[in-house]
Image (cartoon, rainbow, N blue to C red; front, side):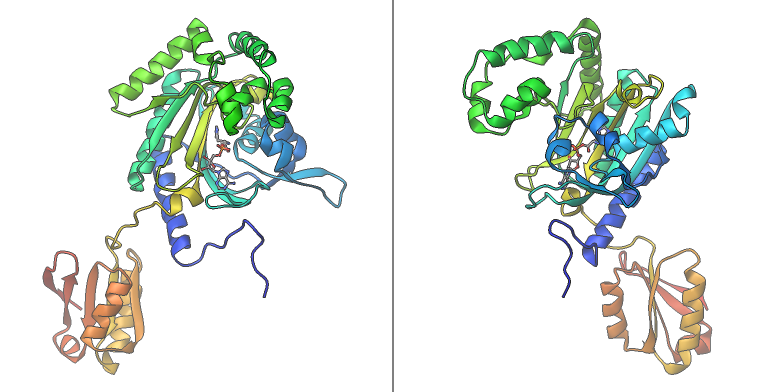
Length: 399
Ligand code: HAM
């Protein structure tokens, strides 16, 4: 028997229902917020991710599904969605068009990580990216939209925010941090490496000893320039105005190198160690790093598998039907009514005669809201009883 590869899963049965429900609900909300669907290839040139996610990140440093294809090209299965969307924006020359461009996407991503609960090698993200809007209001609205999506899915969450500064204040902070790092001993090997490649990633180290050593490290949030400080204050004000709870975590640096200013993560306390259910932030220089015309950007991605187990699926499909036959003679009418109703509704049926009780059981299994059975009486009267299984109301309808 051939099984799926380690860290990869089929969506079948309940999981496929949950995947589709999430993607449909979130796509609808993203469209309400003015985002258009975009789909980019899974396979891209490896350099795209090296130049965006960054060589100092674990994703590029350790986790890429990278190979040389038959044409000798160095290619990689995308580890995340942002880089491909930015590449597509530039390929379509939309970076040269004025105005805000907003996209949403979903699909598989690949990271060669050590699989564990909530951590897969093939996982799925639902993400959004917005280009060309420098106002921090865009960051705030994107967080509000993500909050709305999680609420629509019935998922409890906590929000953590930080500001990573900009090209003016970040280098000064980085210098301070390196001075501090040089003054302490005992950092782990990864942090020693990060100190030279991208020192702020040290703040994100999960090693307990490093965490203790870094307790007194300078905080980025104390070194922000006035523009970054104002933006961060406005972000907090909008979140307060909309009654969104958040926590400021000065050590939230995110695992990808392209961020500046706003960085955020949504956490669930109900799924174990891999508790980050969504993350994102602003990346104002990524488009130019990838040879596009300078265009600011902000977005997020949620981890679909981590959310799937938390989703509250509706008990009944709100306007779906079950139609059943009580006699052989009624089978033809049942089929005709089923096909007719399927033009506008989801309809479950069986091509065999069953008792009323068996049909009710089948309707329950199908999670149908409305229930119709047709037998000899219904054929004779040319009418049937439409039963609402939720409210228990009944009404007579012409066949
Ligand atoms: P990220 O934080 O690397 O950000 O991933 C976003 C989410 O994907 C995580 O919060 C987590 O829920 C999920 N995830 C990540 N790795 C795994 C894994 N191995 N198994 C299961 N789920 C996983 C990004 O990817 C950025 N592109 C987000 C973004 C978009 N920033 C701006 N725009």
